[in-house]
Amino acid sequence: MIILPKPDIFPSEITPKAIFEQRRAFLQKAGFGVVAGSVALFTHPLTAQAEKLAKSASQSRPKFSGIKKSAFSTSEKLTEYDDVTSYNNFYEFGTDKSEPAIHSKLFKAHPWTVSIEGEVKKPKTISIEDIYKLAPLEERIYRMRCVEGWSMVIPWVGLPLAQLIKWAEPTGNAKYVEFVSLADKQQMPGVNLPILDWPYTEGLRMDEAMHPLTLMAVGLYGEVLPNQNGAPMRLVVPWKYGFKGAKSIVKIRFTEKMPVSSWMKAGPREYGFYANVNPNVEHPRWSQSTEKRIGAGLFAGRIKTQMFNGYAEQVGQIYAGLDLRKNF
Ligand code: MTE
Image (cartoon, helix red, strand yellow):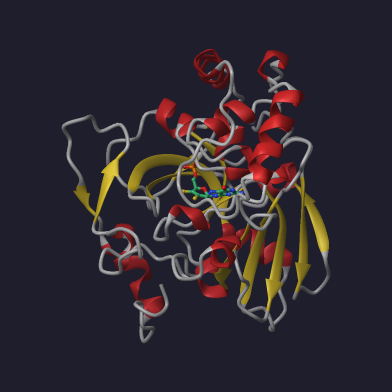
């Protein structure tokens, strides 16, 4: 049985419009373009209090029941719930890691529909409730590696993307799949700023999208996906850098040509289409050979990053013959 998410409303958490407008004007004057680092764009006046509220609110989120456990799960120690839900990248809600949990509190992730477009037999739309019903929901514990050099182990709830693609009925011309996130200026303060080319878009090759490890996540830790983690539905591709995992998806488009993602547009030398985790190919500004496991403690030290994030056995063969230095 699935209990549907109800919006949590905390009116005290709204950033006053005047303050937001002021910051926006300042940033526009300052000529802000691409921001690929962790720069706080919205300093919330009540950050500490808001963070506390964000955590207590998330404790009462609706839970899924009867989820089957997946054999694809890692047995590594899980990253704490509080870290998974308070250390996020979701630039539509701010570029500092603590901002998405705060600024997404009023975000309405329900009702929600996803439109299916492009190379399909017939364009159509599907509600999030119907997506829940396409296949039995599974818990998949995946290692997740961010391009910035940190990692987490997250118990996702979701369904194989392949099931959704089967329902979408792509034509024989479909070689790629593009995922488009919501870009709502009213609800998402970051979309009013030229941080990325909105809406956030990402893409996969068709065989990557159909791979059994590729998940359409609708929850984590057994509960409905928190807003800051991409409610109500986000992509999870565990052998790729985290930025592939488009959040709050509203459109899935099948294409013949390789889609150009928001990150490829922002920095083509730094962010490639494949984005496979690869300790041997450095990011132009830093090494990718090690990672910091979030929550492991101050003295834990960095751990070695594995090829394809440790999923080489399952996915290595789909890249046979591809030069991974050129196709990063
Ligand atoms: N999706 C959207 N729509 N907007 C974003 O800014 N950030 C990406 C990805 N998906 C992002 C997004 C990046 S850079 C990462 S590392 C992951 O989401 C982070 O997911 P998490 O916050 O749930 O760990």
